[in-house]
Image: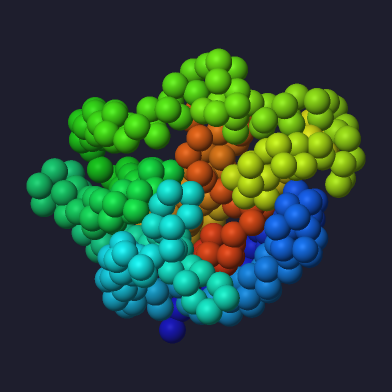
Length: 365
């Protein structure tokens, strides 16, 4: 029986609920107008987000008390189950199409996004595989290739939906885990070159991605079509100034900024809470990532370290991509902001992931 302290990382727990509270507040503020116009209920999105936040928080507390070594035995089965869901979602008439991607499965009045479950399942599987076969990683054929195969398979299935943003988060998270586990630098250089060529091919193969790339380089050239999202996002961020217009006083949420409660919720944060409010949110994220790094460094075994690296890396990558998109640093990808953006599957799985991370922290002496 492993001995460990019973109290998890209190700061991480506080930071999680702080971001969750801000997220609920901003989801309501950003979505009230759209919800009233589309559903006749200004609380429509808030009610659903609160429901998933409650489910996610309950699961987080439950997972927090489950020894993280328990997941080692179920990692492979969980990943196979996610592959199955990724195939099912591609069947015409079964998968729900939103934003041009067949990424959802309907469950009663709600829907789930299998790719979100896949990210967590891959983190668990890779943590198990890499901790058991670390000595093989210096070998490209015997160590690196077997580690990459499940990642490539998941990425391929997600790209068939297609969902490049989620695929990017998944691949970058897994590559980070493999790097930390001890893979050779020269292999990563080779993978990087192949990845750049593959990424370019994916962009060229889809006209809508080329359109997004063109809009990224000069969004003001076509502000009503290809550059609409990014120009409206910048028009929300810029006028916010130092203190913002005040909570609930956004102008861009009045049918200007598309889906302000999801991908572009940080634009509304900047507009309503200003530079100071946005900086405070980013500070909370930085503190959360810092606690994740500390837990990874102090974890009692490699499996725990890799779990913490994967979960912390996944959150960090999503934050960086989302912020980069809304500020016009990279093309639009469709990645939500962890804990703040509206979305049941994403929020629930993020909270479950934090629960695993909290349990790892409870094993630290």
